[in-house]
Length: 208
Image: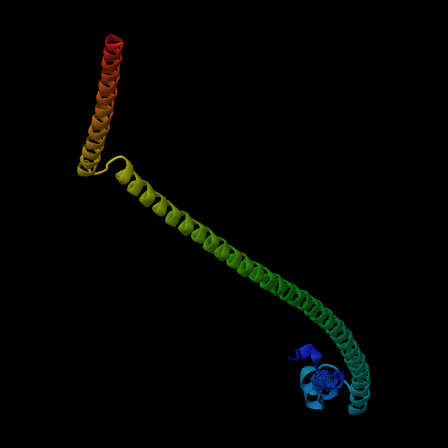
């Protein structure tokens, strides 16, 4: 968007020249009627008035040209400085905006990298907890199996059925009685045979 000091120099010169030219030399001339009314006590012919008025116009025209030249040159100088200042300001703003844009792009890239790192960390965290959960589930299942085996073994080994123990005890007692009876019968038989043998020996000695 153009500012007022971005206008072309020619257009500005025309505007200033028109403003200065509006103060024409006729505005500074003194009409003859006014001269007669205001300066009635001064004797002056019309020729003298024309000569003075012409001199006044000439000097005023010179001043007018000097003022116009000074105004135009001043305006050109001010416009040049303002334009330079505007360009420098725009260049500074553009550099600052470029630097800000570069920082934004760099930070966006860093943000994308951090986001990717965060996603990777989240994935590693999920995988880690899945492994922990699997190991814990396997450990819990193993503990349940171990407890079940211990309970079963305890029930079978310690808290067994009394009927079964009584049956075993009765069976063993019967077997023991039978074995004792066999031993007793064998002992009695051996003792009887020994006695018979002794009696036979004694009888033989008597007969002999």
